[in-house]
Length: 269
Image (cartoon, rainbow, N blue to C red; front, side):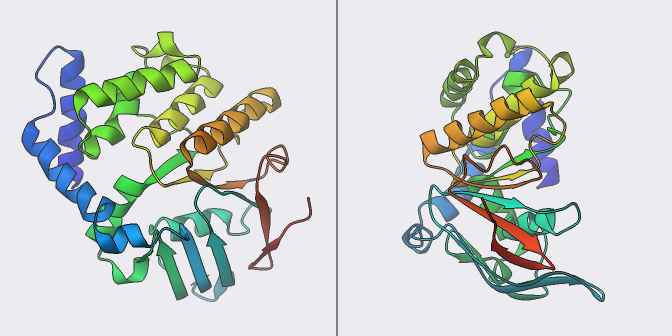
């Protein structure tokens, strides 16, 4: 899968150079993978909860990071998780994404029990149904802004014309319509995070996980980015789970939770 994704990145760059579009064999293979999670009866029936954790604990050797976590997140909810640095916020997001395994308990994402899936199945589920926004943006420096946004759509087998249309719409909505052919290094931190949000939303995932998305931004830019992320997710009906230190986001969230002494609990607002 790593080689295939590298190949798709090269094909996205080829479009910039005027070459041929993403080969149909790559699109077809990705459409099959997407359909395996996007249209099967078992997958589509489990929409009442987007995320469910039951008695989830995580320990590294003798160090307990999370203990007996119960969490239910419904479609379209905006849930914020606050807590001091090292409290386990990022660990919790990694567990929800299937990037890490719980020491005990069960995690369901879109009705799928992550512990019952193979690594390949978890990767397909992430690719199709999750969007990620990171503190350090994680844009690919060798791709233009537009190519960064189109990359997850290529991975999901979305047709080139549709991908370009979505990219143009997102750039317009972000007030960055003139930036499509620029490279990430030519953008400010706030602009890079806007593009990271567009990339996370481009393939229309069911759930977006945001890990300290304003950690590298000044206060005013952070407010703008948080409002943009909130508006974009609500506009698409996307579930948003955010780990953050920022108190600015509390007023936007549907629920605010905190991790204290390894336990997840409602936070004071």
